[in-house]
Length: 452
Image (cartoon, rainbow, N blue to C red; front, side):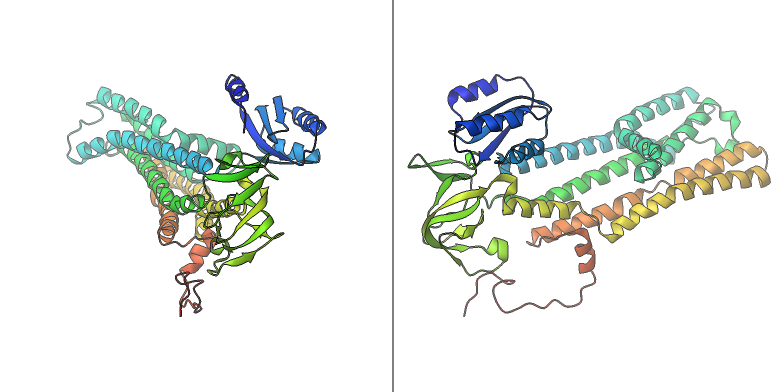
């Protein structure tokens, strides 16, 4: 544990990022100098302080923690970031909540502009463009502001895809909404350039499309939040404190302060804090969270134990070997997160379709323009432009962009609510083809409590 003086000193540091590492393998004060030298040699490190008594390192600088761990390992020691699973999960959930609220705000603003326009247009309350050009110009300006706030990420994403010679959903959305706005403003500025029947504005279409896409993204975030309940349960398997043996005395410390190679005491009925190897004592451990087997496993000196599992009636001392992100429990949590973010075959198919869809739509738009240019009535150019822009506006793929991710996230979320952790998106899609499920008679896949 850091001393009060050290903590005050660290609080007075500048706003540069600070990493805490647990360092194993140090046997003397000379090791401290070696570890500090290895850390200070990493580009971006401004200051590194290593405590031999606490076997910790405090590093200040703009550098990735993985780089610091690698530097310590290359120097011949062991290192791991001191960070609780609770803190990491809380940060993830806070970020998702922030994004969820932002998507709702973006959908609300775009909808506040588009929905009244749509209702007024259907009720025939709005003036024609030639008679109300100032009104429509103001509407176009307000629409542009709404599109910038609520849809800027689509246009930025479309530009980046274009720059890398790709096409994605952002390309389709930006192309459809941008075409609607540009055409509408062109009609407002020069209404005589198009036929009378084509003198229409589609500002409501551009904003409602963006509102729907953002609302769908918010629903997706909400569904993902429900699926994180499974992760919260996994994180809850790790205890908040651990009983550490330091200088011959046992003391309870926060789980974040447990270092590598430290000796810990586990009493009857307690959850094991971190991964390690038993030094002294014997007991039985319920490892059903790892193996699915409900029967306790006998443990004695030299056997490995896994953090999050439950100790039986015995007590033992063991040495911490893996902490933080290196624990088996943390790796399981990462696996679940990877499954939630993965795409099944149908999701990848949608991406492929989107990649082909964009150039196809553009080709169709150009072909439409050429057909009207060569065979259409007068004024030829005006009708050709209107027909081409109509193709681009209609092609905006609302359903294509929303249906697949929402379906995937709802499926994963419903499974998580019933305690089923889906390994990846492909497994979810394959489960739809199952006709028979065969279970054995033990408690492994039933209640977890075998009985006669």
